[in-house]
Figure 1 (cartoon, helix red, strand yellow):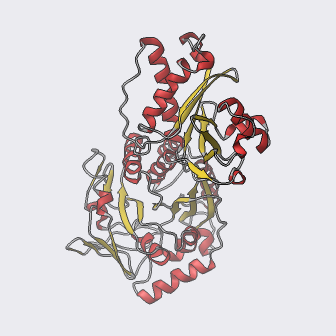
Figure 2 (cartoon, rainbow, N blue to C red; figure 1 turned 30 degrees about the vertical axis):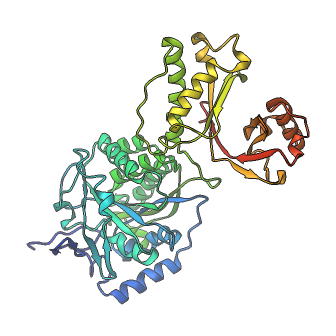
Length: 486
């Protein structure tokens, strides 16, 4: 039949009606109901029925199926129920191309996408941060012409979020480097925002063997949970695992880890044979899974893993350069967080023994520059080791620890100090002293011991000076990480 494309087990045909940057739906009435009332009620019912286990941390992304709602809608609802009424303002949707063969990733630049439930505006400020920056990321309108993988996610988003915009991306055939490039652009565009959700649209096994479907999907889901993007990429290339939106998943894993989200939970998994009740061999079977990408619960991290790693690299490089040349290295960083003015301490240990520790409490330079300077000073200027500063020959045995500090907060009552959480600065006249939060943990001191030692050994004050109303007390928190951390 001319002008019609059939996608087996996505069960439908697509068409595109374009007018003034309006992307009309192409699978309304096939993948999901064209009636707004019927569609709304269907999604509501799926969401009501879903009972996902709530993840332990902040949700960064979902992996969601994209078949007809009768097949995969109940599975998709598991993920979407967890984000209902959450304050996401931009949703990046990583779809996959079923009809138009191309390489790289196509980003829809502006306008609106429509569904029977209404129109959703494209976040064009976000898309412009992706386009024309890399040869693998561009706008190929044909990639969206008959494509359903982005579209089927939209009604679920419309029923769960408020006042959001979308970034529609359809991914074609991609090299691993292209996935990495897209992830890098997305990371830069997201920056420090916490109101961006990433949705990866993918189905799993496609084939004619129900037993094989379960076996391969179990392997694939294990690889996803392991978050090894490169291993997953090559397993998909070698056809040992199956994801029709696999390159989107690979990209999302790279992106998530780069932003500090290092945990994936599988909420629900099934396949079309189980949905229909026909599990006979020879029946076309497609796997569906709903997963959530998050990070472990706890204090919200200032820095993600990539940023911590980079600061540790900067510290070690700065020390090595200075010990070799007598000059501090010239650095040029672009990460917005590393460009922030923040205080930091650098601690050096050799075989667990202190070898130097110097910091800047309030921050006078960009964080990366502060870390570079404090690393050199910890190695060469700590008064306790002036007679024998760190030498180049021992650098290989030095473990570097960095403490990035929050702003100082003045307190009126020492009872506000939480040992192990707060670092403390005391000041009385010209004398002052500071302990980092980890001092309490490492020594096991009580609060009285902690404060008395701070007064005596760091500020040169009487042991009870911290109880004097003329003594100013400031608290702060520190994000502490070292080269021994995994």
